[in-house]
Each structure stands twice: as C-alpha cells, then as structure tokens.
Image (cartoon, rainbow, N blue to C red; front, side, top):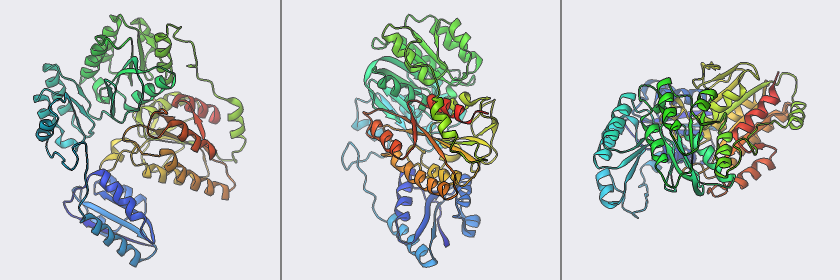
Length: 516
C-alpha cells in the first residue's frame, strides 16, 4: 500500500462538495481509501487515525488549506487518483436551485428575488454568522441559524436584537424546525396537526414529531432554539418566545417542551409561563426533575417517546398515561441474543448521529451496565479521552463539533461512523453496536443501505473469529420521508439488525441485554 497527499493552500470548498469528491476518488481503480478534507487539527487527527497520514500533511497543512489524501495499492495508482481529483477540482461545478441557473451570491440579492420571504436560514462558517445575521434581522426577517461554532457572545447579541424587533432567532446550531407545515434543515415529513413543539434539541424534535405522526396525529409548529438557549447566559430567550407563540397559536391545542435540563433560572422562567397556560403542556427535560414539572401543573415525560405518546393521548382526550408509552424490554429476545455472545463479549459501542438521542441513551443506561464513557457532557458518565478509541461501554455523538469542523454532519455523510462500526467489530470485547438512523430532509438518501455496507463487513470479521455481534438500531422518521421508514426498517431486519420503534425502546433493550 502507498499513501500520497496533496495540499491546496488557502483553498475552500464546502462540505457537500468535499464529500462528493471523496466518494469519487474512492471509486478510482486501485484506491483503498481517500479523503478530501479541510486541514483543521481535528481533521488531521482523523487522517492519522485512518492511516492517511503523510509527512507533507504534518509539515505543510493548515486550517485554511484543503487536503487530498489517498491510500492506494501502489504509488502509481495513488498519483493517478490525486491527479484525477485535481482535474475534477478544475471543472465547472453545476449549481441549480429554485431560481434555475441563477444562484444569488448575497442575502440582499436573494431577498430581492424572494420579496415575500419572512424567514432566512443561515448555514455558513460560524465566524461569519454575526455579520450575515445582522443583515437578516435588520431586514425584518425571522432567522434560523443552522451553523455551529458561533460564539456565545454573538448568540446573546443576536437574540437580544431579535427580541427588540419582535423577531425569532432559532439557533445557532439549530438543526430542525417545522414552521406552518414547512420542514427546515433536518426535519421529517409529518402531517400537520394540533401538537406544537418547542425544543432545544434537534433530534429530540425530530423524534417527537415523527412519533406523533406515526401515532396518527400531527404537528402545528416545531420551533427549534439551539442547545445553548436554555443556559443562564442566554436566558432561554427563544424557548420563551417559542412557548408564547404556541400559546397564542390557534392551530395548537397541546404543547410539548423538549430540552436537556435548563439552568435553574431558565427552568423557573419556562415553567412559570407554562403554569399559566390554558393549553395542556407536556415537558420533557431529559433527566430533569419530574416533580418540579408536576408542581407547575404540566405533564412530565421521562423519554421522548413518552412525550409524544402523552401529547397524543391528551389531544385525544384520553388519560395521559394510556397507550404504549411504558418501556418494557423483550426479555426473551434479550436472553436469546445474550446466549450467542462468547466469553469476554460484554461492552456496548453506541455510535450516534443525533446528540439528543445519544443523551437520552446515557440517561436510560445509567447504573445499569457499568461505567459509560462519552464525548457528551453528562454528569453520571465518564469523559472519554480519545473520541476515536472506545473504552469499556462507550456512547459517541458524531454530530459534536469535534467531528463536524470541516466535515459534513453524520446524518448527511455517515462514512466516518461506518468506519467506526468496522473498528468496533475488531474488538473481541464488543457485544453490542447501537446506531440511530435519522431520516428526513437533507439527510442521507439511504442511511440503512449505507450502514449495512459496514455492518456486513463487521459481521464477516466476527464470524471469522467465532463471535456474535448484536446490532441494535432505531430509525427516526416516517413513511412520508423520502427514505420511507418502513423500507429502511425492512432492509435492516432482513440482515438481522434489531430495530426498535423509538430510541428509548432500543436503549432499554440494551440495558436488559448487558445488565450485570
């Protein structure tokens, strides 16, 4: 094998283009692995761990540079692949959008061509967000900031400015919203209905809205806030605005609030408003104080599934606790899977693309399977030192900033997680690999198919070594999504993957499977 690199100084291409270029290079004859990537410190660590490291990268690649790295059968094949990639870079990239061949280069030009717009979505490098966001707010538009790596100072300033103008800023790092039936960013195709959601959790909003749809009801509005909104420094500005908007929305009859536990003053502020609501309010502060929610006259939910089920029950004038909200592991299935493990197989490797889903899993596994290491901030879990190397039971969120700087989000490009699936299979102590597959707009067109390529290779490894590996998944989405949830589930189950209705169901099953 031969590894070759090429560095393009001060060269920028967006993440979608880099993903496509990487995929193209991997198809070249004799290429074993390839990446086109921005030269950030984290990405360089990724290249080193993936065997794509060269002295040239060590000495010359900087954060503003683009790296093409190729591992091929021999030097000639590697050089041919690099040259083909450079030829591809020099070609004209065809771009199309709703305006045909015309692509507006600035916000001002876009506004001129969409004069009736009342909301703008920003997905640009975080360091540029403040400048462009100010333009949006000054033009009188609501704003959704998909971008991450925006400073806390900028977030506070933008939200205060929006508040003064009676505008809404969703984000930064706001992955999902559904406004008047229109899905934005990572959102699912769900029917319109009478349940409104405000969430400081992107995949939390996706999970609840999809489950509400799958339970037979619909969403009036889905308002994302960005995760930092519920911190004391920001003050819950968007969550409060969103809650008030739902209280005043004639199309909303039941409200759901989703978040990791907000800071104390934000919790009190939100619950004080909810306590005065004439509409039923279901609150899912993941891992939060249920009694505090009850004291405010709201309906507490421990899991995202329970939040969706309770909202549907209340809307249908049923008892909130009726239905299938209770989580019960299939002990017979767990016993069958456990009986197939070889001696020494005892650990979980949970590889997530959705941060809220990963966090919910940490809560549900707490004190049930032994120590858990993670790259998320959770007081009852251990902080993992090297995100590229699992330790004991491990829960990794591949959507964290450390993985997405200069790379696409794993919901769009799951290649990094797929590589990790194979690596986990090589560890003789791995018993369970747990995955979330998130469907919807802007997500990978076939996440099940992509994951199965890695799962099949992982199974080949374990079979050769006489081991059994349990693959446990949840598929967040609906049959109305372009990926079609039922078809995704069928693909997985055909290959022996265990698929559960919700993330909470999957986590409870794993807790039963690996319980001491």
